[in-house]
Amino acid sequence: MGGVVCSFWGFVLLYRFQSLRVRLLFPLLGVAVVASLAVAAASYWLADRWERAQVARRYQEIESTLSAASFPLTPLVVNSIADLTDTDLITLDSNETVSYTHLTLPTTPYV
Image 1 (spheres, rainbow, N blue to C red):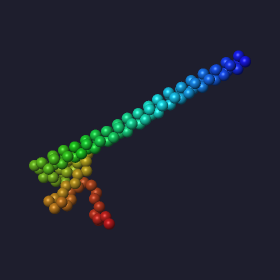
Image 2 (cartoon, one colour; image 1 turned 120 degrees about the vertical axis):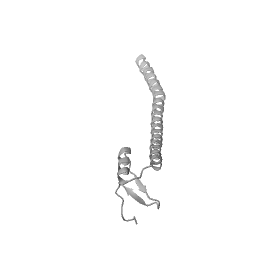
Image 3 (cartoon, one colour; image 1 turned 180 degrees about the horizontal axis):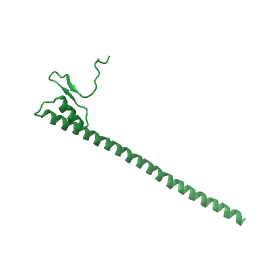
């Protein structure tokens, strides 16, 4: 009978510690996983927002520099500026039609 009581109490103690482990470890792991996913999502969102603002600011600076230029925007100048800024530039004339680009534009309109 002493062996049965010891195995019974051993089972009870083992079950209680497993239960405690399950009740403490799994919620903590769950919170850690959710927190890491939240940090990753916030980091992605902030980095994307920062990058878009940087690109917009860069294009705005290029546009303001070119609109204040005191020299004619010849094809050679546009190509040089496009190479220096690593951008694709298109110049428009006073009628808002493309006067020069170093891109390959389609000649037929899309239907």
